[in-house]
Image (tube, one colour):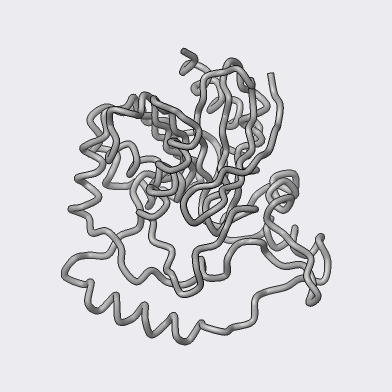
Length: 281
């Protein structure tokens, strides 16, 4: 069964836009997209769900959700705070989480911080957030501050047509199909006077001032007690998982045909949905 409904949830300081896929009476599973994507990232999985209500969020700064206040950096741990607020607002006592790339990192951090709340965790093409080495942090901080100053006020990229924007999305660092690009653009593109622009907050492109170090990340991963599945695309971004998977207490590690956005490709989406369908309670 597949359906889509959209609504807004108010949490302290922000409005979070949500889409739901699957069975409206099904077992709730929260889905978290990757950097510069949006909740449409899970449309293909939604087509194959049975007994599952997939609650797909536009993370803060993405899609149709609020932006962070001007000048406030986008730190990944703030997404964990946002997620907890959404969970509380939706009155969910026990969780199942699926995340892609950055969303997978957020899901893992939440599962590590609140291990008793998360029953099942799936991390697609991601597991741990990007990090800074503790010994290198002073240099990384100063470099990030300098780069942010240079980037401030730069003109935001615009396109003369939706087709141009779609082609750019299809041929980005991590290419996606035409259908996937069209879906992402439904919430990821806005029309302005200067042309078609991405709907995400330009501040998301700024370098991070501070990141967790490996020791801190390892602590979160080792705190995860959920039944965990890690999915890697054969042509994906293996560096987002290398060296981290073995830190999990228990894990099913799967490699599937596809690239970084394999969850938006028909064959992998169906296979991933089949796993999620086993979470029905």
